[in-house]
Amino acid sequence: MPAKNHLSRRRFLLQSGAFSALLGTEIVFHKYLPPGLLPVALAETNTIAGKDPGLVVLNDRPLNAETPAHLLDDKVTPASRLFVRNNGIPPEAPDSDNWTLTISGESVEQEKSWTIQQLKDNFKHYSYQLTIECGGNGRAEFNPPAKGNQWTTGAVGCPKWTGVRLKDVLQASGIKPDAVYIGYYGADKHLSGDPGKFPISRGVPIHKALEDEALIAWAMNDEPLPLLNGFPLRLVFGGWPASTSGKWLQKIAVRNQIHDGAKMTGTAYRVPCNPVAPGSTVDETQMCIIEAMPVKSLITFPKSGVSQALTEPMLVRGHAWAGDKKVTRMQLSIDFGQTWLNAPLSSPVNKNAWQHWQHKLRFPKPGYYEIWAKATDDTGVSQPMVLPGWNPKGYLNNATHRIAVQVI
Ligand SMILES: Nc1nc2c(c(=O)[nH]1)N[C@H]1C(S)=C(S)[C@@H](COP(=O)(O)O)O[C@H]1N2
Ligand SMILES: [Mo]
Image (cartoon, rainbow, N blue to C red):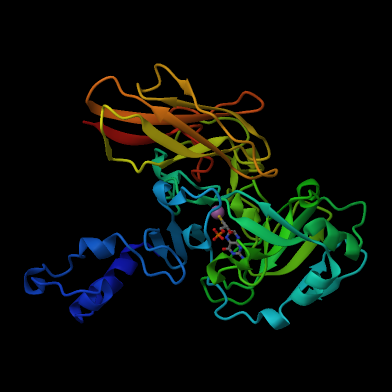
């Protein structure tokens, strides 16, 4: 359902006079506020439990909210600043003590269920910082437009996750040699209310599932997962479309074929195998499943629109990531891409973690500038300056991030 519903609910609150309470202060000229007009302060904030008020709600049923770039400045994304992407209705109050994870499917020797305590007791714990990014991050810029949440740049984050290795748990159930894929099932409900339907059930090829960094996680930044991010248990596959990182995880099926759950088929999370003209209709047989995400970066400091004194150098910083690869070069431009400066770049703390870069910039004279940021991965592939290949669902937009600067 579109975001306007969300707004109309807020308008209702306004009519009932509750807005002053939400703002925490009196709206002095309340009687002159045109009916239906949202106080700016409220339009710019949200009231999602446990989330930073700066997250921007794109849809309220299901809930989808993204994080403005300047709120992603932390090296380790705080739970309060990790985006939320829901396809269905999350479980209301999951009972973590009695939660079970079942490993099943045609390619395991033996179906097995584990409580979270059993997972904690039977397997070694690992913590990794893993970047998760929605495959549709950046969708808003595609033209012709693609349906779906109009993510700008904020459906990405890199918290520290703790749990057990998926491979250890799979091996304890015995994986048959014909295993090719895993598929997850979560406890969220389909929007239709039909209990027979899953809102989403995706997965990854077995080689990704068996990597050291593929986790069944119960913690984010040493705290239990936030409910909206999958409490009490979720999968985390860093560097791949975050749609593979199943939340409210109840079951993993080890498959002897490519998993065919909800949103694995048709055009969902697929792009044309070969480039197509914008607006084309693409035959399903010509669509390929998205695997590792492409190289990308964000400027997280300063905030776009900042004023900068000409006499001072300006500190600019952010993160860069490249799916399963490493970022090897980070470049900045203040002249719309005519010339580029190399910015020092850190190594990732572990595979699939984003890297950090920073640089001090000087400007030749007062006026309007844009800072463009471009990352290059270890195979020499760089971010495109404008939009990458158009695709029907608007996935994989890794165009350079730009911010505006006023030099005075
Ligand atoms: N069970 C379940 N898992 C899910 C989803 C969902 O709707 N239900 N959404 C997926 C998608 S599309 C994304 S981008 C990520 C978002 O993770 P986050 O909400 O923790 O940021 O979760 C994935 N896992
Ligand atoms: Mo997603």
